[in-house]
Length: 253
Image (cartoon, rainbow, N blue to C red; front, side, top):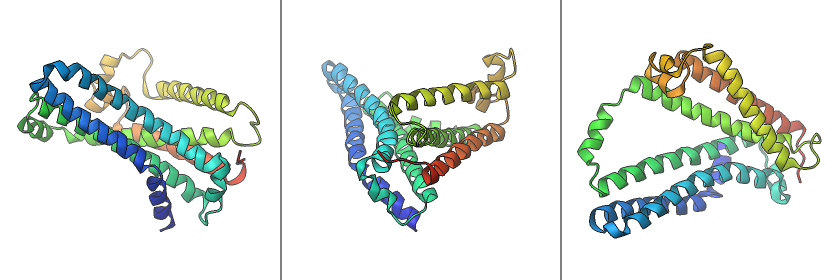
């Protein structure tokens, strides 16, 4: 129950910003679609606005992942967070769950806005939309969606691990710069390790893609369960490391 209360508090503190950007995405998608069919002269203007809001939504998600965690964990007001009668594990996981929720919801809103844009501009009909949905191959779509979700959790875990690490006695100055360098180093190292394990030497992307739809989506030749399990391993590893730092080494600014 404490975890659910933490998650509710996490979502409550950030829903207003996301609600505004979601509303703009939907409204501009509708106006762009209608202008294409009825007011062609206004289409470029609405199209530009729609594209900019889509970009803003993506940037907002990234900022929310970083800023919300930083403010609640390391700023002067963070003493309220650290005095809550909850464990470090629940606190860390609630932060991760909140960021994952908003990221997934943002992706869903973007897809809905594209559908609204297509239907309102009469490029796409509802019959075509439902027909395409019935033809989806769930044998690769479900593993691909699970892979994306686990990868998202891993990305958030790495972000929070790095932020926790630079707020320890090991780093006293230039924390933001060191955090960026450390994150890039971990991303490059992960990519190199993944390439060594999941991509055979000299094997082309075309050869990998020919094996399965999931292989074409991820670029990895191994079975879906192995790739997803590998992503889950990294997510658990960085989450555990972040929680340990939160318990034993954290320094508040």
